[in-house]
Image (cartoon, rainbow, N blue to C red; front, side, top):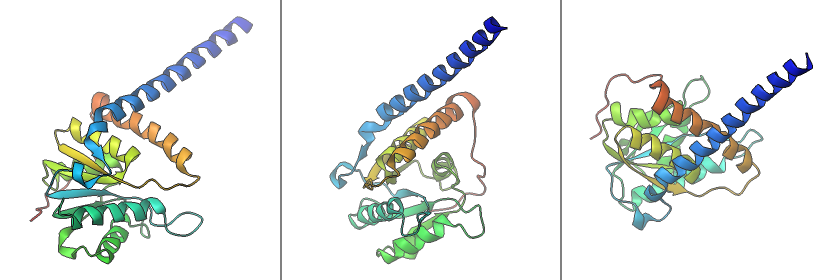
Amino acid sequence: MFVLKRRIFSIVLTVFLTGILFMVAVDIYISACSGKYLSENLEDIPFNKCGLLLGTSKYRPEGGINPYFKNRLDAAAKLYHAGKINCIIASGDNSEKYYNEPRFMINGLKERGIPAEKIYPDFAGFRTFDSVFRAKYVFGQDSLTVISQKFHNERAVYIGQKIGLSIYGFNALDPDDSDRLYIRIREIFARAKAFIDLNLTGERPKFLGEKIIIK
């Protein structure tokens, strides 16, 4: 019985450690693939017709504006007013009645001087994977600039590269807060999921739907 338990423990430990090594390797690989296509400097970003603004909650659970949300909108407005993009796809989660990331993004972008007709909502951006796929297959973009924090842009750019997009990432400021470690750990799991979806399972977005023409 003792030998059996030790063998089971050894198998479980091996599987666990293999999983950890896989996720760490994928994390490093995705950063390496996308790193040279990211920048926080406007001068490094080429012109693209569209920016893809990735959604997050406007408010923090404990109250107050989420700095990740604010900084992403600030970056999108900076990119637009610098003439680096002509329009913005505001892509986020709208899966619950009172949770509407694109609507909050649209309002925030308009407050920052971006005309409503230059903003295209994507209400089915349930995850980054969906947002990038839909930018190509629903909104018809072959090249774009994705807008989020660096850690997030790395994954989005990798996804875009895998589906044949010419894609760059404009990095929003990283907030200096206590959530960064939790978000970084969550990102490692998200990268592993994206890698598996793209290279092993052939996963596709939850919704695609009819094409939307961007003028």
